[in-house]
Image (cartoon, rainbow, N blue to C red):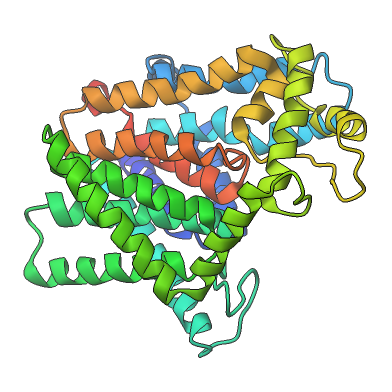
Length: 401
């Protein structure tokens, strides 16, 4: 009994450390993950663990999704890239089930606070670089100060963190005046940070989570929610456009890229449109089970040479759209399997009687469903780990364990 208590305490310390390291370091987070998985595999009580896993439709959906990737290796021709994808997706077969069986309800707030503390550290360093108090390092530049990860990952994670802080401000009635002031300042500084960095997908999801939060605040008052959104959203956009040169340039560039996409071979929008068109042609030839787990780069290169032989149109290993990638690899079967994960998340969020879990559990999948239109966010280390980590406790029925 004492051994179980010590093991459980060890798990919780490791989970808190993982929450903190998640947005800061790949190697640090992976070290914690390896230790957790190693302890889990050696700690026994396998029957209880197995029963917890098979009792969750979300975990079953996650495991099935991964196994489809394994099955897709049967008809893939590029075995090495197939194993690369399997390695990228392993969180869904092992990490999510492992975390699911060890998270504790009484530690949820601590997990969240540890994550937000790490975001605060990241944000402070981002501002120090932006004000040129410290020199840029790793991914950061003065004009795009995202030090620990690229803006592609940073801004969506920042958007989710802003949502978490705002949710505390509006729904946690136990906040002291000092903590309320601190959270308010934190939310404001993160919002400003959102628009001095270059992640457009994250900025879009910022407005998405803000809209979701407004609907959650004005529960069942749809007209009032819409009015607040119609006033607030344009105000934020106009303010950001006027005061952030980077945001202004990114908005102007996006407009040019959309209106002139056919001629913008180097633009992110133009390239994505071509990725979509070319990938769709391959999907039409293999609609049900796809081309195999590892054959996207190989098949895309072939179709790219046929459809878009322009010398400036690059080949790719990633169509920058998770839906297209999965459908091309595993067909409609794979797409349905992936969407089933999000379906169960949304369904389980509605079943919760805890306001925080209900709201955040609904917001997390919606955030990723939108994000995945612009990139393969379930393949990136930082975003996938955040998704899996929060999923491990947002959708667990603690009353059954």
